[in-house]
Length: 317
Length: 305
View (cartoon, rainbow over the protein chains, first blue to last red):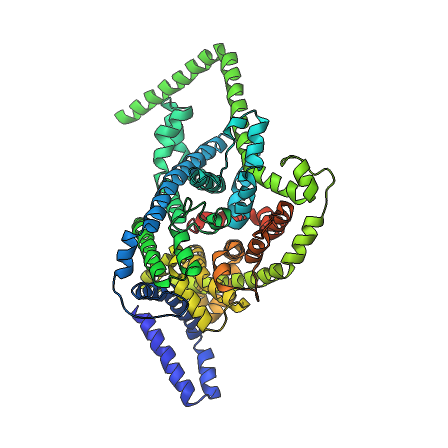
């Protein structure tokens, strides 16, 4: 940090010098002391990130304590009024509940399916890379692409209802995304489809790092098949399970694009989760200060998950 | 001495066991082999079902993109078109041509910038360590996890005040800056494996830091450049939130234009799917050609969502 401030001093010095005189000598000097250029770039990057991440967070908190409503910015300080309003607001509680329900469905399903696929692919499968690549493909696609694909799947005369009819299960046909009771589950299902390949990749890499000697030892002790996994391998990939869990958790707190395109947060408020609420309040009804209050809350929730995660990850190194 | 003996007898025991097992298994050999085959058949069936579930939405989407409006209502959503038509693609291309060019431009530039900057940051954080460099690294890394929703209002105001709202520069700036944490992470983990002695040798030869970076580190890092580049390109190309907030009618990124095209009053699914396919084309290309590197990036930075 001291060094950084030193660098900043240097930059300041340089700026002052520049103001005083801009001679060839100085330019030559800079190029001679080439350490400066690299460090200058580095410090610029740090300043940019500091500004675009940390300063913006503070700025957002400041906005959340004003009464800014409507297109013209007002800066009257109102303290925690917006946060109190949030606690009284059914929209906030609905989106928080939706978010929790979404997490409860989406996270365990993705982990279970991802782990399942990884274990299956670990059975010395022929053409393993083909399977792996295709399972991963949905994750590489943009959320708006998969959102349109799933809209096409979910609409009333769409693909899912067609397939149900095909198998004589016409009675199970549903309005997947226009029925408020099941829309959130449909959204979760589609996102599980998109993420389980990625989670599979994480687990597969982890399973491959379990030392072969442990597996052989367990096999000599008579463990095989499912028990080999539940007793030996899965306990050894705890770290990756934790990583996958955190990834999915953070994603479910910032999922926006997919739901925004697929359902718009609707029908009604059925699929509105916190990130959608933040966007809607700010850019659809111009309640900037209030939206910032919810955004700050969202940020705090994410940090409560991320900081322990980073702490645990880097303490080990 | 005694432990050695014990070990030896143990080994003998194991060998005995194995022999016994061999004799025993030859009796039940046929049965266990049939069991094995059934297991494999079930295994492959499950894998193939999962494959079909993965592919159905993509298949149906692509098929629809080649259908005429009439064909779309006549054929089943899974069936191929009766007569393939390129009309939806022609329509989508007309609508998305400029936005796609825009996206290629700013995505490429922002990818290059964020990779170069990340490479330099990674270099400084591993080879020019200073007091507190680990703290700086952690603070940078935290930026990866930032939910962008919680900074959209300050970001919007800043971009507007800079006078670059709805221009290419807004997208380049924003994506380059928010790319730095991720690329720094990727490059740092790679540069950590470059031995210090190499740097010291170059130093004793009288090379300056800039020369070390340009002549030594940079040529040594095609791999992280590809990994970070592929990762950045995909995530910038796929972005929608920034496009939605920071651009308007003047400079439309492809993602935003696609949502405008598809979100009209009357949904023509064949056009939407053709547009979706056109928009995904670069990603599909990257996935096929450079998928290996994309996986590496995803594994290394398993955090972006």
